[in-house]
Image (cartoon, rainbow, N blue to C red):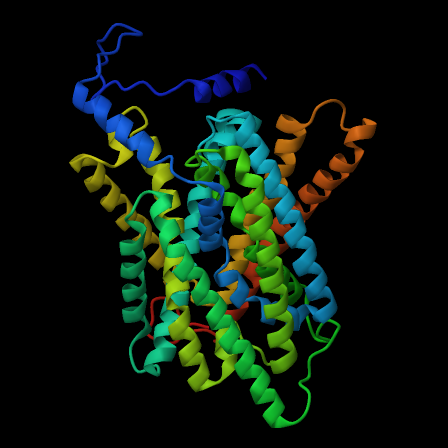
Length: 464
């Protein structure tokens, strides 16, 4: 406990600008005075990164959250059946809203928490800070990688598949890099309206097209209310983790709230986002599955037929790249902030700040591209990401935060019983997804390579 208290105090202490080069021979506690230029740079930087209201926060959360998750829902419904798919889509969505509320409460109680890793220090000391920091970086890099993969699939469909997929992977990575360069989330919010319109139109086109195709065929599809008869444990868990992936917005919430001028308004944002997500995901999964049946593909846009899927992917390009780029921006802000914690460079408004920022975003994007090429199949990339990381960021970490940071009194006190049960449920769900989902993802990836169901890593074949 003593170590944890020391670590908490370390976070709460405001950073002191001690120059770009530390001097080991300075007297302990001695710092130099800030120059007028540095003071101006710091004031400008602080103002630049403090412009989000709750409406813009909602838009930024939509950009980060409503993207690839929706494209994996119909296949998840096909595996789990209409009943289980709908119940999980709504139930996990409501739990994600609650866990996001807990994350917001932690931010209000501990305003110095800038990223999820800082909350890790509060619950597990220095070890928690480093562990969650690593998970934070890996998860967001995986997300950029999944958007790189989706961009590759989109360009291959639009081009008719005549070009090596590696080329489109590089093109996708470059687009994501360029869009991730603006360091403030307020700027990303401007693109959010285009992003949201893009995913709604793409899903709408796919739903209408599959519905029309089904009516022209003249008989109902082979959809079922119950799970596929031949579905294995691995198949079921891959489907569940794809739904979990769709509700991953809590991971970036600390980072986004750190730019809010009125952080207590976050509750409005998470309710608006959560309800929009539940409606979009449940309708997308249920309608496309009911129209297409067991043969539904992932990403779902592939199920609309050759011509219509080209149109849908063309419309979806903004959401693929805008939503993907914001994850690169968030992880870049975290790493850059750690590298230049005590320097004006962290505000990215000096030549050194911009050079270091562009270099960092480039490295992140290259690593994400490597991940996309190494795991070139959509559902399993989402599944392993959900299992290893989102299980914690959305479920068991918020539950731990409630028990350790938010709870008042005994967990078995009358006023706490409901919340104790709810947070215990979140914790158990997170651990089950972590263990079962990771096992299932690895087994499915191995099976895909062994059977030749997917192309090899770093090859020209089409991703699965």
